[in-house]
Amino acid sequence: MTQPDARGTAIASVRAYSLHVPLRKTLADALYVRTHWNIPVVEITTADGIVGTGYSGVWAGEDLIVSTIRDHLTESLIGRDSTRISRIWDDIYWSPLHWVGRAGVAHMALGMVDTALWDIAAQRAGLPLWKLLGGRHDTLETYNTDGGWLNFSIDELLEDMGGMVDAGWARVKMKIGGPDPDVDLDRVRRVRDALPSGVTMMVDANQNWDFITARRYAPRLADLGIAWLEEPLHPDDVTGHARLARLGAIPIALGENVYAEEGFTSFFEAAAVDFVQVDVTRVAGITEWLRIAASAQSRSLTVAPHAGDMMQVHQHLVAGVGSAKTPMIEYLPWGLEVFESPVAMTGSSIRLPDAPGASTAISSEARRRWEAK
Image (cartoon, rainbow, N blue to C red; front, side):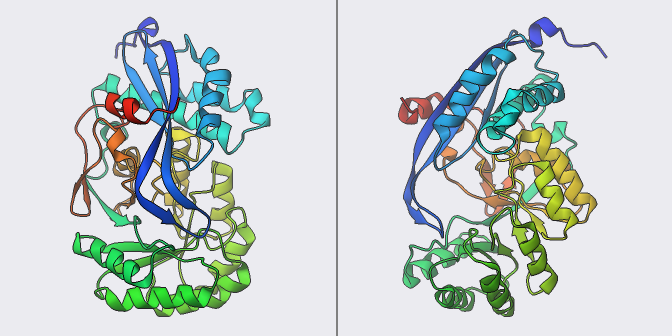
């Protein structure tokens, strides 16, 4: 096989910016009230003109991620061979930023760069990323998480959750973790009674319970037929999640706030998680996501990513390397309008893209409307 010309594959420029995109309505969970979704972006251009795009999705701090790329990563990337993805990943991870960023801002900045490099690799191969990674599945199912918010009244909640089912979703999720767990439980019961029995329901506490609360209410949620309890405790509390999992009342889902392979390994070894919600925008990109997914699947755990990427990258990852189980990712449509080729849905199923790359390119219109100045 002819080796690529490193002069053509060399990184010629790096550009970072962020988008401030309004949500269609105000949303609240156990932690925040939200009106906008912020999307930091990096575009890496090679000497032969291929542009790879990486991005993240955050409620705040997008300026910190962008400045990390501009001030700490750009100079070291210029001239590097874009095909050396793993080598670049290691060099950035073990750079002086390691002292301040084994998780969080610096780690997410590395993830954006890594995703951009994988986008370049797929474009250069002339393949959509999911085929470059192995092409395990042809279609994906989603569960709808864009509903069931804590700021909704009971009537709004029932209309919202029922609307998702009417739109074709057989798997839906709602928020709990409010000030009174008994109110949470009543809201869950009201929704469960209102939805068809064949619809799968999950709940998300957004880290807002302690162990005593989770131990008390997990069996009650199980009695209502809830399929999983998501992030009941602090996301670093491996021991607490393991204790809760050993009770066996309800499967535990977590991972959107676990930022590195080592953190996931701690949860795996402690048998503290059942559904692994590893998010490519929280861990350090596709390179680390693939390692975590392989580790989870080797333990027969289900990988169902959190959609901080608005599904654009995860559709490729789950379809490319998923296990034989029915593949599933989270449906979260915030900010889809910023992409040149937003994820394509048929009902609750994703139609996988044919275009080369990782489906990450940002439209010029999105930059014109929402780029932060």
